[in-house]
Length: 239
Image (cartoon, rainbow, N blue to C red; front, side):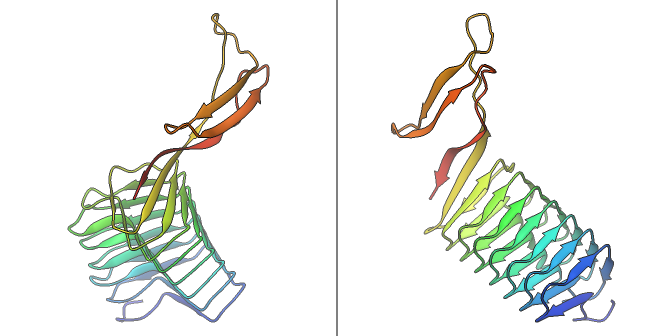
């Protein structure tokens, strides 16, 4: 679409819709590639979405829409104050395996506002490093989990949170973060423990792991292969 304000695909009050293998392009201001409003339980897969207008475009914009799955899409959003994915008052969404690229000044790869309890997994989020750009931004958002994701934003901080509750970043790579007051960011990693004897042969053993303040965080009897099950461990909490 080339008309200002026009939308590539729009779902308004539409539930249980499958949007798959589309190529969506918008070239004007305020023209989102895919727009969801009051749309629930939809599946958005394998689409290529490009917005190249100079101002205020989102690859995918979702407002008051819940329990949607957005997976395996390629999203390229250009323009000032633009977003790869914009979530506004949405809950219980799954956003996975997407490639999200934000080009131009001011905006974010993913912007999460007043949205809770969603899972972001295995996404790659990059920005061009323009003024005011960031990888992911959370405002008034809590109980979201971001895992197995790579985020790179050479401009501003990769992760920015403000006036939010607790959000967890598990096995997620990024360089820097900015955490506002009243907000908790928990950084976690996967950990597997291996136990060997002096000859480096695996052995069974009881493994107990405590954190810095003496709390037991993992306990397991390891078998003959000498390897524990994988578990999540906290590197730090930024409050």
